[in-house]
Length: 258
Image 1 (spheres, helix red, strand yellow):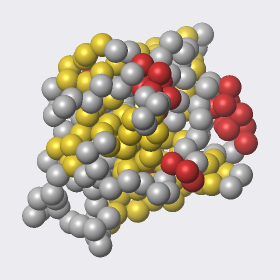
Image 2: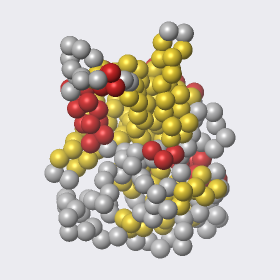
Image 3: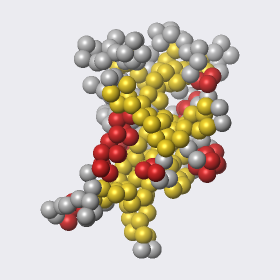
Image 4: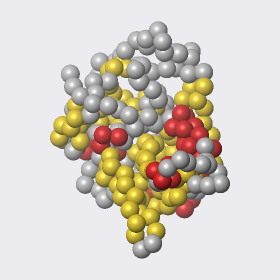
């Protein structure tokens, strides 16, 4: 049965989602280009989610995403501007604040089947995200998780697919401005056996089928035929209680797909 998240549940899950957008460009003497387009600014936006451990806030995402950004910078590109984005709950105003990702304390793993990363947030950014309506996942969201094959559990992937976002840079008063048009759909995923070509580390890999045809956004169906851009997004396990309220846990971090 297709996943049908009520609007209030979708909004509750979206409160954990944080985007990190950036603009970078290749410049001399760090790199060389053969045409003007080689030096044109390029922009992007990655999917992350907030979590809290003790008194510390982190942004969690896929390790290969952070590795990819580091590789871009190592090949002679420089960050022009980057920011964190919150306020993705239904009806909320999407807000952003400056964030120097290349100067943040980052730890990630992208080898031997592990693919995750964490960004430690400064109190300044925590205050900004709280003001934007962002809520961190806490220990209760990753402990005592029900079995993935429980018939009462449904799974949803949330994130920022490239098909549902537009990130552009424009000139403004002699400087650059990042313009965003972003939506977060909830995509139903269905637990499945891991295929032979997927590395499984002690059974900790969560594999699922993703029908990348339809998603839900504010009780409306939207087409998502490619989940590129959703790497780093959380996969939630959602259960309806007998009183029709909902409970949810973080099941996995989206890292790769076939």
